[in-house]
Image (cartoon, rainbow, N blue to C red):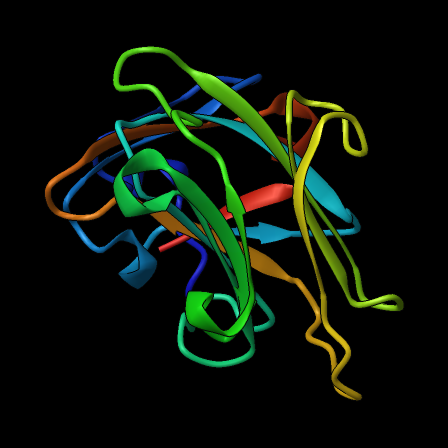
Length: 173
């Protein structure tokens, strides 16, 4: 993937401390990527009624190979899931009303290549208020080098990434 100036991404604004993306039914997995450098977690907010989808990928720009998939507020905003390669391969937690149509909800995601542990929690401090974790017991766990995110066609979502991560993020387009 080519690295482009941030201004090439539609429906977003950038400030020094915040990176925000509007996801309005476009498949952002095709072109909205943050590459991650020397971090093992990030935090973000999402405003969406349901179905916030995130992939942690080894290869930036490729949503189909060597990814961990996370869905927040799936199944009508009642469940949250993490899986290897696809959501259905993993774990599910009951999380009624975890997302809000008009209120920003804050989450963190952390990962460890050595332990194969992928964790999701609420707030902006990794380790606090955990919601769900997935342990990759495969002999070949994935490296996490990039993240992408979307809400489906029927759901409008606004994503904001925290300043602690954004200094280590680039937008790939």
